[in-house]
Amino acid sequence: MRAARVRSAAGERVSAEELAARYRSVRRATERIAEGLSAEDCAAQSMPEASPIRWHLAHTSWFFETFVLARALPGSKPFDPAYGYLFNSYYNSVGERVPRPERGRITRPGLEEIRAYRRHVDARIAEVLAQARTAAPAELELGLQHEQQHQELMLTDLKNLLWSSPLRPAYRPFAGADGRNGGPCAFLPYAGGLHWVGHSGEGFAYDNEGPRHRAFTAPFELASRPVTNGEYLEFVETGGYRDPMLWLSDGWDWVVAERIEVPLYWEKGERGRRVFTLAGERELDLAEPVVHVSFYEADAFARWAGARLPREEEWELAAHELPVEGQLAESEVFHPLPVRAADPARPAAMFGTVWEWTMSPYVAYPGYRAGPGALGEYNGKFMCNRMVLRGGSCASPASHLRASYRNFFLPTARWQFSGIRLARDGSGGNGDAMKGP
Image (cartoon, rainbow, N blue to C red):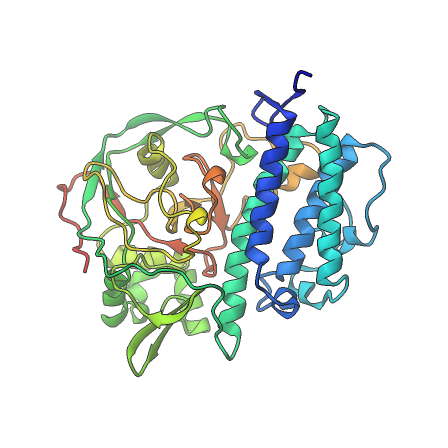
């Protein structure tokens, strides 16, 4: 019998079997993150910005039930009507919800009940795809991309939780850098002019990646790799956190109020600088990219280094012809390793390793309109007071990334795998940047 075909979110026709296989793969990856964790590990919430692991497991299933099954199977009843209140995140048009800082107080349903909920949703999605219903694939692909976002959030939230524990337990062991060195950093030149920015229309993209439009860039230079721990340590030890002239006003107020002195997860012990990773605490490797810094810290470091952060259109111009490859979630090494440039004429690690702060505020592209209904709340309503990050991290799935992808967080956010790549105006020479350890 000829395989039924449906339309994906990108508009091309794919078989229901192909879509079902992708669905199973993404859902298994989420379960893989939770493997080996106790029910207690999955229930705790370490800070208001994070969520318990079991909440992520339930919320991603609620998303499919609410935005896929309810549309593909009109009249279908929810697994449990209370789950809409417990596991809605921020969709005001769908209904009331538990406030984010209070998700750790949701002690029921238990972890096994949530896993039963996931199995139930999986079975219903399989029914939809087996019947080749065409009302759901666009929402289904959005649900898969949404779940991949939560896979990274699960890892960053878990890292903060384990670090907050008095025992500082490890999540999983993984290999380190084996003493490799990232080498020197150079600034690579790019010509100015009008360039196309935004998603080109091929493959999946979020609505905030368009409309595609032209943007002007002056000539600029972009660092060949991210900033390392060794380079950032020099900023720390020369008083970077004590010099108000390096900081934006709000950033300086934040540093003083929160008594910030080093990146998140750095500590100073009897044996020198230490850093907490998902594999446990270890000595700070000076060749690794610095990670878990806020926008304010990234901006202050750039000023100290005599450079700046890239604008997001500059970053996209440098990345748009590069393949999505590097240290990504599939390696299951959830800590950035030293970057080696394979081609001295191209920037290394533009995808994966660390999310890279840009100096661009998260705002709408020209002509942007949020979509109708609850899914229109996905991106558009956050276009205020946030800064754009680009590129992905060591916890980002490869199939989730592309050059036009726009991540965004508050300028104080540090618990994500966020790092720094420097830029400067295009008048300097090539190859005269800071030298790595």
